[in-house]
Length: 167
Image (tube, rainbow, N blue to C red; front, top):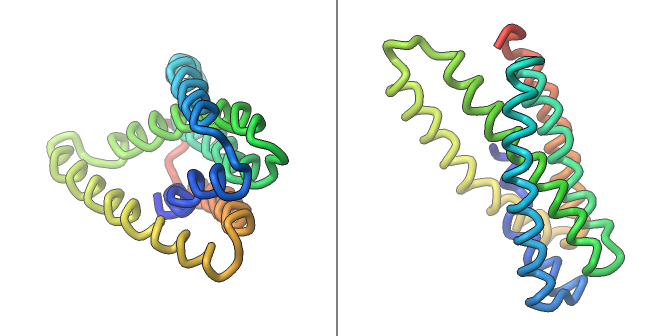
């Protein structure tokens, strides 16, 4: 979650400051991303039942790591639309994979407690990640910080190898 939220404050700044994206295109980017998100839930949900939630999490997280990289490498604002499609498709699988792996990791009788702790840790990472991303962009640039965030997201996939295989 920390790596996932690292670039969060950087995207809109990059779109406006670096790519000079108009409001209309930014709105269309959101529409594309959320439209693909709906389709992604259907695809990843079905795939999770066939190949397992761990594989879905690894594949979708790997795909999601491409989003900040694709954004940083966008030569013009119109390229935000395919980047948004990457985001929408991948984040659906990450949501499905993370939630289902959390449920699989906790005893049934203690699920409420485990879910509460999981949520608290996730929210803490959601708080700290953007602060780290902002500091990184100040030390480098928006584009470089997005590239570093994408690489960080890709590296965190290695930790998923420690997850159970049969979920």
